[in-house]
Figure: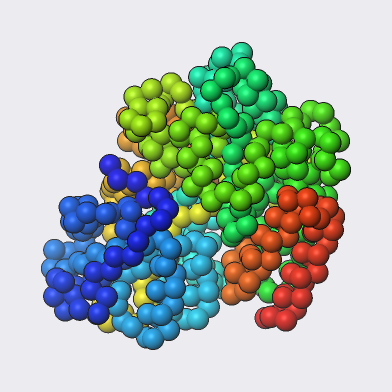
Length: 473
């Protein structure tokens, strides 16, 4: 089994000059290189599409793309009006700007009512929304759903006196206060741990899209007044970063980093201090991840299936991975009922992942629609899970016995099913990347003790408002 989501992949583009390896009438499809790295993998991908309904008369060509440059490459191609590739693997974090530029096909004009109903009723809603225009039309079919949970050392939790299975850790979220004490106890009891909890806090867009987006949401806070305003309208949505739930999320992280002697830590002794290494403010997320899978840290905030698979390598936990590595839903800062905004508070995962869309300039529209339709089927969605380990965004497939009882991932699927109920997308608009850099900087300023939560979020609110007003729609 290959696994998608590894970092540092390089770009390998088949047919970049525009020629088709399978003939001029082949439908070109882009996939992530680390999901389908070998020619055999790509042949299986094509066969899976034919098995799911693509006519054998339609030739398929698969082009592999690297994570680091895929969006820049798409902008170059589509801004130049290229007709190929035909079917594009699009990140949920940057699909909407391509939709706004008119560079993707409106699927509402090409799928029939039953197919559109299937998308709306059976696929994860936030994943769909990442490819939706302001009128509600869809421009993408979800490919995989990158939702996350808290990875932890189950064996070390048991040594510290806890009973993860008996206490239903995999399905019943606990509070951040409770979890911090678990981490502190495990650190105290174990001689093999160097760190307690690691999470990606380096100055990068990872803060905006993922790590802080999730933690802020778990405290009931939001960038722009909750889910209703994630995708705009620009200039006509509230900016809500300078509110108490956001401050509390930052105070909690300051407590975890520096302890209760920090001037802007949480007052409550219910939260354990100094459980997150200060070095994480400068680590690439690969360092955070590696510190868990090589046994140096007790827990990792960002557990995706790939990491469990990596943890099972012979160099790490090997065949003992299921006994040693547990997965639980993210902790919560406040209960959902305590949040001012619907769907926030409680256990909330960030949402990442990819969708399949069609190039607006394709010269093979009918064939590309046939490919997209096949990608919606249970058969193809199950194939992708088995081929890559990524969580299927089609809920009946996620809930199926084949996925829930998977011989390797089955032990963890109850947690992922909970994470799929309420994931939080990043607030993507045409100005997202401009705003994302500023959000990451101001959050990092607070976590680095350069600013108080109030000062940092006040400065952030002012900058976000300026950008919103300058780009009002």
